Image: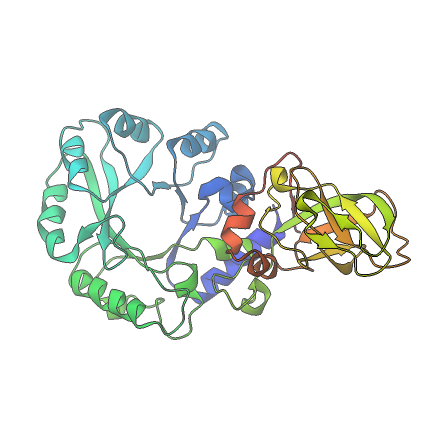
Length: 358
């Protein structure tokens, strides 16, 4: 079991003592491998997924975790599949209620999604009471739980987060059942304490739903996972294919957008956007060759990219190249691309399996 993933789960538990943990492994476990992550999170209380196909893969591999299907279901057939795969389901729309009302199989644990300001999926707080009562009266429902999602928790001290917390609290006061609100950003925001159940005024369990933090990546744009006590789990590694000398004024790559200011050595690396190394990464993005930082040079191709190794570089074909990992945080690389680390790691195409740090 990869130590980095396991250690990050332990860090989450330290941030939320007494809480249950629903570990998010959707999106192929944020690019880290669905089964690898599921096995590493054996001590999680449940696993959150986004597709029934993910549930099928996990069950076929012998996984016995509680599985929470975050998007819920949209047809009677999907509901039957969810039952066969022993999923807990999220209910976020009135259109899902008749499907559950007609269901005659093994009763579900239902997570009622509450829209406290995200304006994505979920019932408004003022509409929840009758829906809760309706669900509890259904033979196809064994238990009703509540969850919501924070829109701006990755912006510490953002007032909207506090407003969403207050909105959710207005519903959970007196609620008899489990609740869930805290994602990775909320867990690592020192301004809000999500660890205690008492302030919520309910008698059930408090569940936290970490995602990106489990993989050692910070949910905050201005910090890296290591600053939060997390260990990056993915090492996106490749190798050097060539080291070639170019003269001052030479251009490199499609469009000739990078030009050598002096005579230098250009390294060609075996990775491109076909592997998930984004075409939007600009010249100057750091890459590690033999542990040495060098800048990306020119436009990333489908299978290849170029770096400026510097004049007189002696790097050889086959030498190791790190695109991101413990020594080069993916958060830093993402900032160069003008995106978030989530997009980079979930975009890795496993033509070669990424190494999961130990």
